[in-house]
Amino acid sequence: MPESRRTPSWLWPNLLSLDAPVVALVWFFMFERTWRMYVPWNAALALGLAVWGIYVLDRIADVKLLSAGDPKLGLRHEVHRRWLPWAGWAALAALIASAALAGFTMPWEIVHYGKVVLVLMIAFFVLTVFNMQDQEIPVFRNIVAGITFGYGTAMAVHVYVFLYEPTQSPLVLLIIPEVIAFAFLCVLNISAIHFWENSRRTGDPEKGAENDLSLTLPLTVLGAACLVFAFRDPNSTTRPFFYAVLIATALLYVLNRQRERFSLDALRVLADLAMIAPLPVFFALSDS
Image (cartoon, rainbow, N blue to C red; front, side):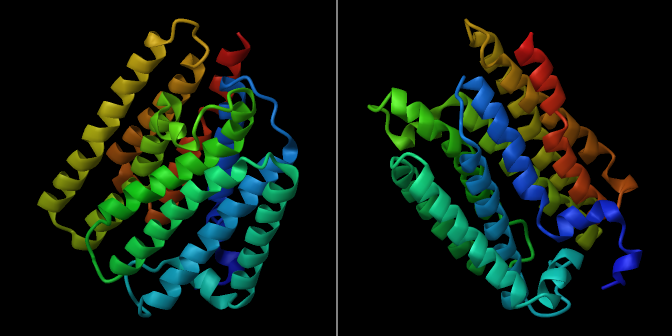
């Protein structure tokens, strides 16, 4: 690993696994405003801690299960390897703190939502182990990861919606259009990195074209779906949210078209920025 003084400052949030919690909190606030809920600060803190802890453990799992020199391992994994076991203990402490905040300061219904997340997380880590030696793109793992991230982000807000509509099941989150759109966006964001890495690793033009189509087509479908969802909303309350998803989708599309101009580390950071960038537009539209 290059010495820390040579590491660009813009790369450190990714190296320290801080990018995912920031993305989760940005969309947490968008869900909160879209659903017209006031959510206490402790829910946001619990979400941020949980996402950070899970991402750190995921990278530690990569380090433990993959052999040194594996192309799937990057600088972000080397940082976590060097800081073992402290990184693992810090992740565990974050998860315990998140569970304590959720259990003692949030509505007890969060337990029911947590059961769904637990099932998704188990599926994710099982798929992670089975995909470790697979050099191809882990499609099913990415789908589960995106759904888990989308559901987990939305549930921190939706549990307060549940207080006003107690007949709803936590599973209803899986069919709410806003959650579907965001989860699909998360799947594509995660998959984009794997597509770009796979194209660079193989150097095969045909494989690159295949990866390009595999990303461009679902991005187009998601963009069209966001427009349909936005204009089908009779009260326009969810339109800013779907426009935010649409902007992030468009930015990922642009990144995909310009991917050869950037390093893989830069692409990871830019992919996260594409998820955050719609926030000002969302607030401007929702205020109006």
